[in-house]
Image (tube, rainbow, N blue to C red; front, side):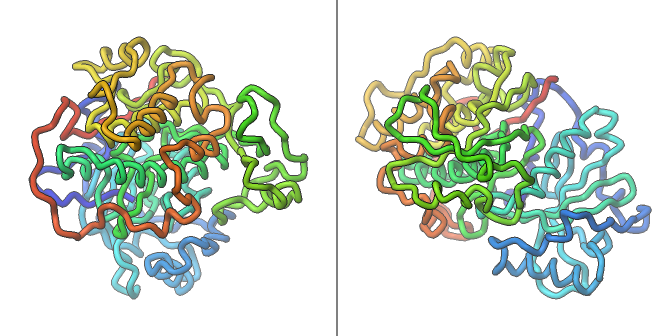
Length: 452
């Protein structure tokens, strides 16, 4: 799930300390490659869990050779895979809670390609009081089965290390990819494509009751086929979403048509389907017309944790208030703005200045007038997402169902977005070099922070 840095002149972690409020040292300073050597570790084979017993049921990975290789290796072992079943190639990233290695299945396994193994030192995390973050990410990964979200291939313990094996994305991330574009920004059509795929991923997360809380270009990875994959879920908030059917023309404050109790998600959701079956067993859902919206948004979730990335946090977080699902839609607005204009709208020279701007500064676009109808629609969507009052923010009430109906996405079939040709496919001829960065954050990875 973490990209292999193609530029060998530097190695950028998926969290850097450049803009971090909490100046914690990198896990990599505590976990070296040598400490992961087989000779020095007291290896322990992971115990199969109820979640692992159904691990082979991943519809979106049915034709994935890497997934099939993992399943074949586990079948031959007659047990869950462990560290001895993988060969570490090199370190490809480090962050606040772990270090990521490129790895392959051991010499006794056939095929499978490469994987990303995230290694967490449990003793270090315990000392930092961040063990809960690692557990949150592991919990979320177990729930996911979606084309734009990571697949958990294997998990195991090795001495005091906790390891998860996930999909490896060879195309880098959208932060790096943006810097390769002319003027370091995406065209409107490219930004629309990436925003659509991120929107579909957020919709799925919110249906599961998961508030992401760390959307930014650095966490939007690019697969080998050019499609995206969200990463890093340690700051996520797990809650519940109640499915409802609403009219798109009704008032945002009117009472929705809530589905009957037997169609709600009162039981544990199956992690092995893109859209949980329980949500679709009601006849009311099966007979919906195109004029109705299916909404499953965790609107009741609340948290007072001060988490996120400075330039992407919502005003309610920056001002120290409680927050909920609306923070993801604010981040979506910042994300779309940066993709189109090459910078974020509220950045300042200091982190404190950035947070102050987020709370008080009005939204301003680089030019007074849009250059096209498409840009006009983009600005309108961004303005709706970047409403400082979360109650009036697009998506806060109806989630992705509301955002999808915006004119910016007119003519786009979200059900078929996965079959569209991406703007950039890794390995394609590189474009010419572009101009210098337009703001201080360009060229540097932004960092998530958490104050509790």
